[in-house]
Image (cartoon, rainbow, N blue to C red; front, side, top):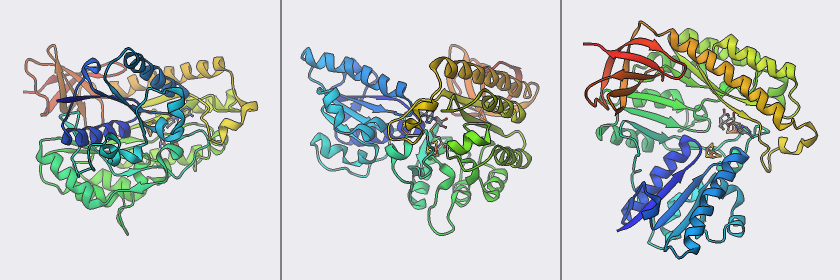
Length: 417
Ligand code: SAH
Ligand code: SF4
Ligand code: F3S
């Protein structure tokens, strides 16, 4: 029996791609292993969003290359966004790599391995409770800092029928949550007049108790219709991930984001008004080329003004081919970027704790996702993590939990009789 180990870096789209690769590979007789030492086929599924993620990928396969040079009988595959971006150049830097495969070539994996042609296989899902379903891929926005339009290509939506079939299968298999994925999930177009709100309605109509989430939303593609659907449909959770990137309208313009600070604030206000208890999370970049201290302070102030529930943060990293990478005269020093990043994180922690504290004393429904050493971990509909002392593993169950405490990163709860 051949064994495959896949190391996955980057976003949920990559994790979902890995599940699809494993589905195909199982069909051809491979079993997945968590132990890289025992694998015959080693695949790295890479991310190129920042220089650091790219560097990590090369240092990881460096170790695999060493083993191969020492005589290990292994095959090494280099996949994901770095593969798309660098292509054949990878063989020069890492000659021990057997194949390079871009995200849009996953269906060709069997041909690449020389074992036949790709059948229509189901993904091998890594989680037992939550099923990721990509609904669109790619990006047309070309934000000046971002490499994704180069690694994932132009926007392509999947057919509603295919998505609905995958969702029905996942629910029939016992999954309790469906997360729709897309770089800009709210740009999904499944046909004439068939956009995300309609897809949510069709998914919501599938029988059974389960939850629906969707990530990531581009701010200006959040329509009133989408907000109304999210508010009204019982299975759609109270959670929006809406990356803002900067609180300064001038920086947003330099980033080629298509909204102002005020417009973003307006969108959040609409979401919050329509959907009680909604969690809104965001992404911010510290130290974009030319960002002044005043402009940076506008980011901190918007985080506080909106009481954003959680924010992913990163220091600006210049990416090959992108527009902003050429603005070298405006680059900020590493020290300035890191100091600003630390302040972003401080405000994130503060707002996170504030947001979590709001729920102490409330009873919320959680979906249990895991159990370890007498602690059940679950998520509320609005995506808060809850730790609950418990004697049994109740993974996969919906439970009413009384929130007894709040920390920065999670809530504590007690099971309700
Ligand atoms: N499509 C989503 C974001 C996908 S990329 C959107 O537009 O909102 C995920 C996050 O990585 C981005 O939101 C951004 O905050 C961060 N990011 C992208 N390129 C980056 C770069 N060059 N340097 C630092 N952070 C970056
Ligand atoms: Fe990148 Fe912008 Fe596209 Fe998001 S919208 S993936 S940040 S180019
Ligand atoms: Fe995702 Fe990284 Fe590619 S964030 S889309 S894996 S560049």
